Length: 227
Image (cartoon, rainbow, N blue to C red; front, side):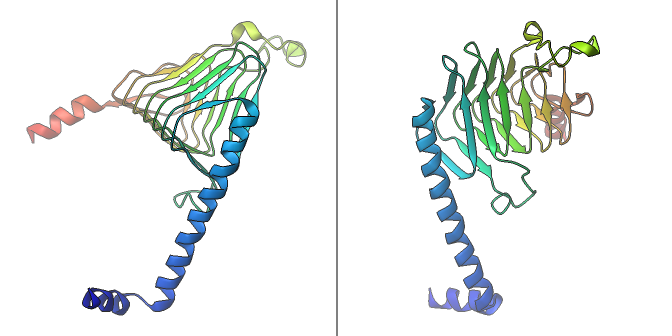
């Protein structure tokens, strides 16, 4: 055991090891604080959550009276750039319902990173084990009519809202936007920076503006086996 420690000390400087240890403790403290305030907000907003939630950074809720926000077991949220090493996070994780008919239903084992989810009047459902990278926006509404232009400030266009369903095991890359009426099939991957305005089937990689199927993951997997 002592020999292993000596090898580690020789390979890395003492300063590096101390810095790494202190930073690890710092991250643990941030997670504890974030999770504590997250649980207080859950109680305040009367939100249903499962067990073993872990939250690092700011988390904002807004829940309209009569609406529903449910979060499953083993939920994680990171909204702090010092914890998300691969990218900078632009804003807190934010979950909002804006009318009594709106619902946000998040399954088990879901991970969010500075994600904004807004359900104005419909249901947004996120399946089990969905991974959502940094700075993703999900919304069930345009929040006003598209045309005529003079109606954009006065006509909210509730009749055009449409629900969203994200299947289990989906991976959504950083800076994606998921628009109203979209269904993303299970196991699919959405490439970074995509805008998803139409439904995506299961077991595919999709990307672009608007997002389109790039390749079929099942076909790729079978081809790899033959090799």
